[in-house]
Length: 258
Image 1: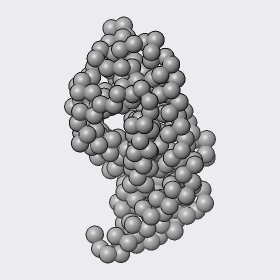
Image 2: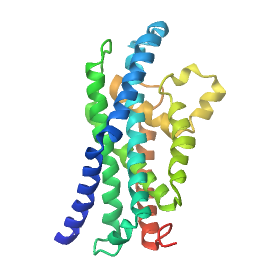
Image 3: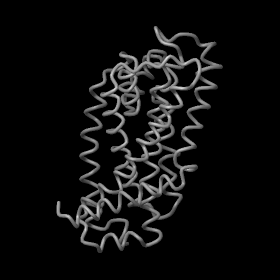
Image 4: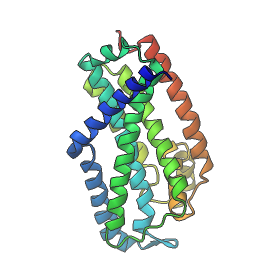
């Protein structure tokens, strides 16, 4: 990587970071408030009626899922909105005609989503730490951090691909509303997989978010309904596939030149 390429990459990264912190009331505050409300309603009020989930309180059980949900939605939303806004305002053309290679442009926007996902995860984690009545467990913090970064990266690339093919702002909100939201809410955030009938357990096993949430739950609690390694394999392979796809689409100008 030449010095000019590095400057170009850091410029995109700086733009994304400034955008996130400048409108923090829209990028960082809403997920924190959502998690706080979930913990208050489900963790405190309803959790007392549900009781223990094995050796863990219900609040401790839902914490990994809430954290993962915040990272997924915000990393995806950041890149899809940022890149489509650049397309809509014709700013992307200035980036494409610059000497910055396409692979750095892809990584620049993707890292913007990773930064927002990381900042949201830190803010949410602070809320969890100070929330009353929650016995926070974090058995493997290194694995949890790696998993969150892989997840933020995967959904950042997915958001970039969505933005490439989107023709109007409604196309940006379609996948988060009709795909990501059902997958996350049916991803075992609020219930264990063992609570479902056997048929629906097999159906739910197709949901990748279920495996990702359970992998993070394993990192927090030391146990989960599913093994952690399928989620890691899926995220690593998925990141590679999405990165290559985004790079090829950007080189061809698909969804941009037309």
